Image 1 (cartoon, rainbow, N blue to C red):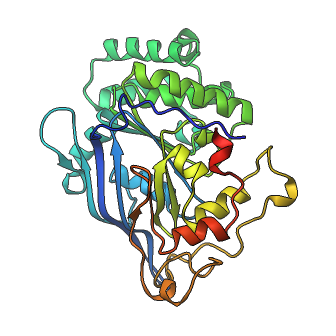
Image 2 (cartoon, rainbow, N blue to C red):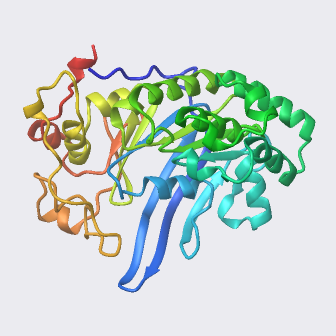
Length: 356
């Protein structure tokens, strides 16, 4: 059975304070065979102090959503819409309207990102210490205070700061788990408010994955962080996130508390995804892959993007695009015309009774 995270927000019923607001966000790339739309009119709020897990199949738009949160869609891609950062004090900032210099400041000092695979994130020709110093220098930060903070963060992540910072250690001299924790420390060096993690444990074994996530959970409150965790690994994120956003066809199709999404999934894709996810409490024969393939970004189906694979789709689904609709639980919504039919006709490996 999955263990879902307990909400870390002080009062789930209170009006939540959005630290990031995404509206009408689309990301496009021009290709020889047409325009690829790798984010498709996305709307999402990220609440201050929460852990938001973003899940879905490979190629669904998860990593592009992560890049959009920092307005860092790489050329020749174009980001359209609004990505607004709401600092604790002062006016809100639309990141899509900032120049490159202001964006670079926001990206490290307010919103930081940990990319998949620390091996490719560190420059192998310079020491780990040099990465910290270069980051501090590029942001005109006090190097002495910054390196002192780096040592504190490394200790909190169960690393030896003297070894990492004082002996010219290079990335190849660290294990995979140590590299990933060093990268986490580097991302926190300028005390950001939001940390976006794109598949941060994908290259690690299961025990190290859980160790990294446990450390993240421990430092979240200490460093007053909001976390956005991008992953394809539903069992891992279900024990860590306060909310889940399920992506399909380059947009969110279901969003809600982890418990609601895991045990009361309403979108046909979410239910099929849960059934396809290995679960020790479910017989192997009951684990069924999601039939069909993800949509082509150059040719996203009209109507509901999931309708070519959906067992309950009808003519309406092929023509009309379903909007996100609120369900019984607060903050639980799904983009489907037939959420009730989905629950009765599409099996899921989990039910509300399993969570009791």
